[in-house]
Amino acid sequence: MFDGLKQLGDLNQMRKTAAQIQQQLAAEKVEVTKQTAKGLLKIILTGDQKVLEVSWDGVRDYELEAALGEVLYKSQMVAAGKLQQLSGGMGGAMGQSN
Image 1 (cartoon, rainbow, N blue to C red):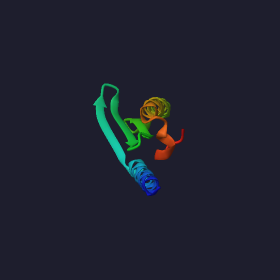
Image 2 (cartoon, rainbow, N blue to C red; image 1 turned 90 degrees about the vertical axis):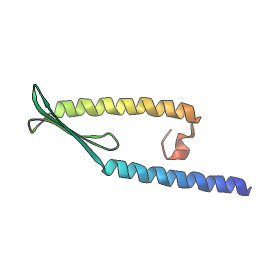
Image 3 (tube, rainbow, N blue to C red; image 1 turned 120 degrees about the horizontal axis):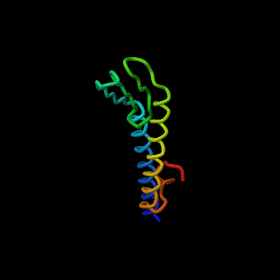
């Protein structure tokens, strides 16, 4: 009985840690600036792969931002599905929705 309670406590701690890591990733910013034939390209993402900005020579490209955001989201869903298969459907226990 106490083993089960300890495992439940460990699982709860893992969920808290995962939530903290997700918050930290969302707060991080990753920026790449590259000179291209079309001009200076700048892309800024959050650490959890959300698109903040795509611009050419300082002019925002909202269509490219939307497309990049969509493809990143789809790739994350594919990865989450594979991880859920590997974990035996324990996603809900790790703070992820099933």
